[in-house]
Amino acid sequence: MAEKILTGPRRAPTSGQSPKGLIVTLHGYGSNGEDLISLAPYWDRLLPDVQFSSPNAPAHVPGFGKMYQWFAIESMDPIHLAKGAREAAPVLEAFLEAEMARFGVTKAQTALVGFSQGTMMALQVGLASQEPYAGILGFSGALVGNPEVASKPPVLLVHGDQDDVVPLAASQMAQQFLKAAGLDARLHVSPRAAHTIAMDGLQLGGAFLARLLNGA
Image 1 (cartoon, rainbow, N blue to C red):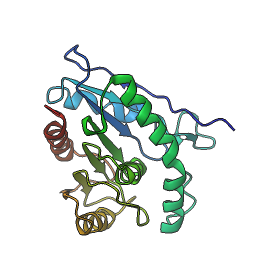
Image 2 (image 1 turned 90 degrees about the vertical axis):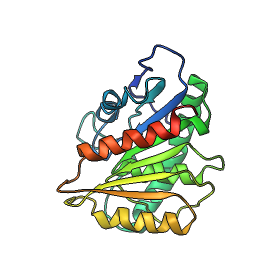
Image 3 (image 1 turned 135 degrees about the horizontal axis):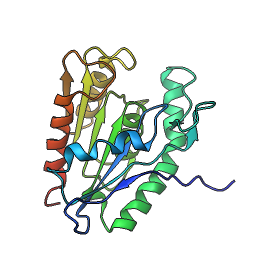
Image 4 (image 1 turned 30 degrees about the vertical axis):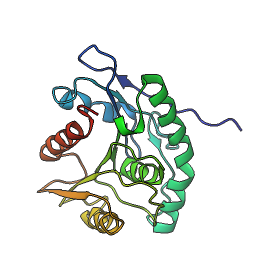
């Protein structure tokens, strides 16, 4: 069977110049690339020279049209989630390599941004890379299993304290694991926020990405 090739929306640097950095946004379960490419306008002022790419996950959610999943969530069992993330990783890694080649940037100039299941994938792929990415920004997600830590990019996790889909404890445990592995891993808790990206997290995330990519 031919390897799945990911596609999705892109947004060019607003400066009109060649990209000096790349942000790849990874949507959550039952969403699509159009959802997270919508973050780009909020960060344009801080990141005018950065290219945004937002792939659709490799599989459709059965019966739901343009809704995608990185892997099926038949249960929240940690072993099942870890297996799904590992199996989905190669197709995402191939997309990242192709995007970096397309826009002439390195991993040191590329940041991964995820939401929910997309955060699981950003951490899975980002930590396993032998060459570190510029950083990982994860909203409302989790670290599944005990992934290989081959590199140590800076990580910012953002999670609402009222999240009833992926509990705040998931990001708290992820931060503990990452710090124990020697990473600069920070956690911001958005007060009164559910399973969403609140404005405070959006602003902190933009500042985090600007520190990583401006002048990279």
